[in-house]
Image 1 (spheres, rainbow over the protein chains, first blue to last red):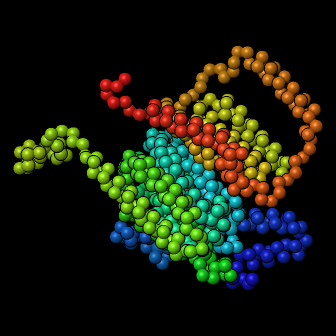
Image 2 (cartoon, each protein chain N blue to C red):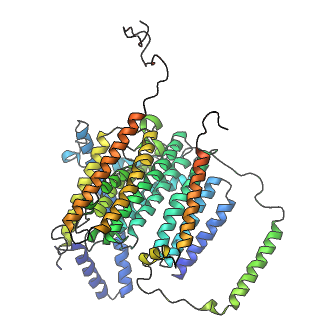
Image 3 (spheres, helix red, strand yellow):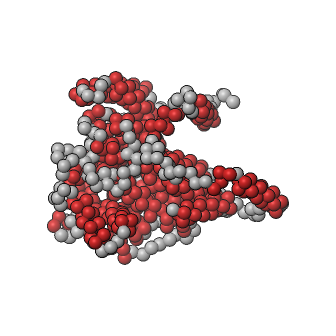
Amino acid sequence: MSFIADPINFIARWLTAVLTGWGASASVTQLILFIISAGLLAMGPLVFTILLIWVERKIGGRFQDRLGPNRLGPWGIFQPIADMLKIFTKEYITPIGADKVPFNLAPILAVAAVLAVWAVIPLASTVYGVNLNVGAVYILAVGALGELGFIMAGLGSNNKYAMLGGFRVVANLISYEVPMVVILLIPIMFSGSLGMNDIASSQTTWNVFLAPLAALIFFITQIAENARAPFDLIEADSELVAGFNVEYSGLKFGFFYVADFLHSATAALVFSTLFLGGWRGPGAETYPVLGFVYLVIKSAIIYFAILHIRFTIPRFRIDQMMNFNWKFLTPLSLVVLVATAVLDKLVPIGQTLLRVGVMWAANLLIWLIADQIVKRVSKRQAVPEVAQPRPLARPPQVKTNDATGGEA
Amino acid sequence: MKLIFLLTALVTVGSAIATVSARKILHAALWLVLTLLGVAVLFALLEASFFAVVQVLVYIGAISILIIFAVMLSRSSLVDEGSQTHRRWWAVAIVLLAVVIAWVAALSLWPNWSTVSAALPAGAGDLATLGKQLVDPNGYLLPFELSSILLVAALVGAIYTAVEKKAGQA
């Protein structure tokens, strides 16, 4: 194996040889390698976030018909670095009456929970943090710790807006975890393993072809778990000032900021691993570095989709969000899970084309039925009329000929 | 390994004590999270990674957060004032100490006390075995189904208590 095909393992082997040459025992060498790789795996995403922030601001600018950052460096690419330096120098403010320990622990927990996900994602066929045999459940468990960080921020700040943001975090994240867990069972079922490596390497046909509806639901729940628009009720600026992080300043706010940007990139990475075959692609097994390139391309496409949704769809109301989850996504995901499980057993594994065809047909059927039910129900629920004639929000001095409007 | 175990045990027991002695109920809930995390680490030390992860997911991700949610819905700071100990706490302490001494004495008389159990063979933590045991009539099918009935009953009860009664119905 040469340097070009698999650089990370090449360096690791070289380092092992050097360390043993210096007379270090095998266990010490391994410990040193573990520490270096853990450090890299934790620091890499954090540095990568600087680029992500620029990408998101630039693309967001384009969506909103502006230029985005464009002053510092070519295409404003050094803008996030300047922002970062500025945020380092800002003052820390702890509000009076704040619960000190939860208040200060919350930003750390928020970032740590996102970074911890990277430990189980196979970046290439030979490069991964750890091949945990319960990787998929681990991702969910770590996500729960992140929720705890948001709650602690909301509660510890001694601020009503932060508190309301905290309420919404719990409602949002706990609810959307339900369809997420149900849908997560589908890739696990196809690969027969909970490990992320096995899930990635078992996808000779990408899971998105076998379970398109499941992939869509998983994508939606991931956006909701990130608390990204249109599910960003926890920081709805028009209602809550800034939500759970309203009392944070300086680097503590920066932590939440980083966690937010990193979370959506991580979500894209998890989605590509679970449904788009992860590092799989032509030649990825012989040249692991190609697998990394494929994973980055797939994740970039998903990340762009997340951004596209964020900048184009308006925010849900809280009741709409809850209804959407409990009355639509959860039943739908249960139906999809059962249908996929039954069809998976009925159609023999060898015939890929037949499997894909049957799965698509079943998913399409389920989607059409769900769509019809939603249409019927929404037709039945007429908008309640509060008074006759219907009161309109129109200033009384405006004169109209309409019987319902202002003083004529 | 032993050091990690001792540290974890110390943190777990310490935070458990803090859970029951914290004056703010919110702090108690957060200490409880730390206790449960300690238990998860113990599971991980026993190479039961599935249980470690499920412990975090269920107990911290669901139960603790729901406790905090319930606290948040009530008054903002439920602070316990006044004495936290019973009048006759010394009597309870004596009884408990006697029980613990008797228990440790009984355990040390047990011949298997000092035998170290063998390490698990590779692949023993296979989840498929666990899953099959849960739906095996000779395994744990009955407890499994019973617990699911219990959960359904709890769900029905929760819906019954939460449903809005229409006007005219008591």
